Image (cartoon, rainbow, N blue to C red):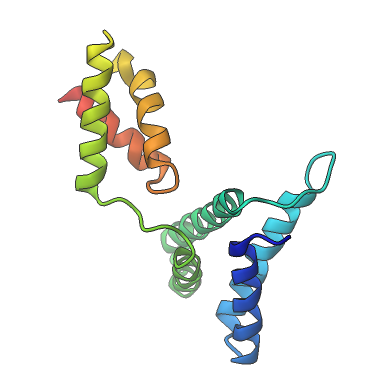
Length: 155
């Protein structure tokens, strides 16, 4: 049984090949390849759940973002633009990211909860991250979450 997200990617790949959309088909093909690699990694081949497929897509989107930044820093704007375009294609498959306000509100709640448990100051970082991560999984990047937690603990 194929996961619905993987099946969606396969259908979109077929449609993009028919439409001769080289950028979209190449991006989806690479992502499906990464999903397959993940499925055969380890001792036993297995089907990935939709949640696991999302993690692979998130990782692929992050790679595109980092590559775009590296190309930009190296003065290769054309390559950076292509990486960003690929990242946007992948973003369509990911859940909508939390806004800064939503993330700040979740972090503030977790900081208050940690303080009630006796954890305070910069040392409370681990305790707060433990509370925040399950709430924002897949909805905000780890670096963004950590920065928000540090800011809330400092303030």
